[in-house]
Amino acid sequence: ISLICQKKLYCVYRLKKKTTFFSLLDTISTSATIPSNTSGLHIIPGCCWAFSAVAAIEGAYQIANNELISLSEQELLDCTTQNNGCDGGLMTTAYDFLLQNGGGITTETNYPYQQIKSVCSTEQLSSPAVKISGYKVVEPISESALLQAVANQPISVGIAANSEFHLYGSGIYDGSCNPTLNHAVTVIGYGTSEDGTNYWLIKNSWGTTWGEEGYMKIVRDAGDEGGHCGIAQVASFPTV
Image 1 (cartoon, rainbow, N blue to C red):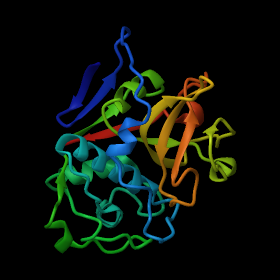
Image 2: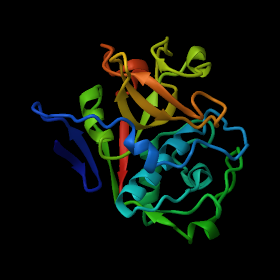
Image 3: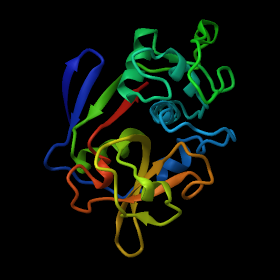
Image 4: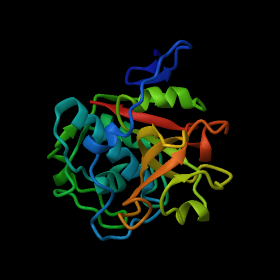
């Protein structure tokens, strides 16, 4: 993997042509992620960027420190002024906000999810539980580069989710997609089914009643430019 650095805390991962991959079979998912939202509160679709960013931070911290801490999506929703709360936002903008304010994010318990953007609580901001040191962007359009990144930690991605995607229940999703990216999830692993179908394993933010207890397997290496439903078009991850 080579790094093309654009500024001090922002780099692009590019895949070297000769790279050997080993089967991971979802090992990241079992150890480095908090279970999909179990708060019982409805997740507003436009809040997805905060859940994607937080899941990636939780995973990166767990891998580095062997401790899994549930972190606050609400802090990002309330305080990341360059994003639009539950009307949409970008994961990289969330990482920028944290880095501009010392890199820290507090716990879910300290700053719980409220289903709506509210006033930023500076009191909670003074109690960070985890700090990031920067973030990196995965080479766009490349499923191979995304595969290499996911082998190291969970990755925040944009995805093109339509009504069929919303109705996913189980199995490997190879159905239709929205024409453009409109949702954010976290890729936490990958694998190959018994019939030889490659897939990504993603964590969504729609609760445990959606998909496979809040998770989805989506087809990988199916020939779609940028991956199925655009999963490899916009991908990034924090460093801790």
